[in-house]
Image: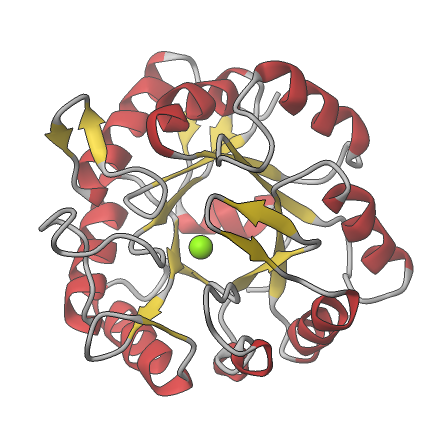
Length: 271
Ligand code: MG
């Protein structure tokens, strides 16, 4: 088991609004501030979504650029992971920020039902995004919502569209996708290469228990308001409070919270 654990903070997502929680960062300035606070609390990676001037999800390169520039100003070594997700957005736009060359970008390797819609990722879209990531030297984070997405990711490696061992993020507990249950995670871990780094994210009330599995099984964790708004029942969280809590639990369970440098090594990224 790796002693070091990498914490990713998923700051904004597509769903949370200021009406749902005042703590969700929406503007590039707010997102950069939240990233810096999470970095100080132990996050070595931030997973970013962009919002337009009305707060709606956006794939616009210019907005992602402003967010990443502001983050780089505050904490130059923090690793940037940008979303290529696209609730309600044109598929052709989903890779438009990849030319910014972030360290990592999410790549969902299949389609799945979300609570109110189909999250559609055709083989052509997946291969197109993977090719772009390869071109710009970006490590794909294979976002796994269901078991079939693992062989799909491994096929991308076989076809030369992913270099090295794929990096997996198991997203558990979303209605319509894989339940947040240890038995599914254990099965996922049997299906991926031993040398593949992996992280685990839990949606809503499943965030903490799923993160605990990541800590105890030797993986890495993602926390943040994208996945869950609450610190505990009825108490709203901030991104940094969630990072602080999981860093403290990890340290108390024999794991050492990794730096961005550690994350580069674990994810096998270039300098
Ligand atoms: Mg995301």
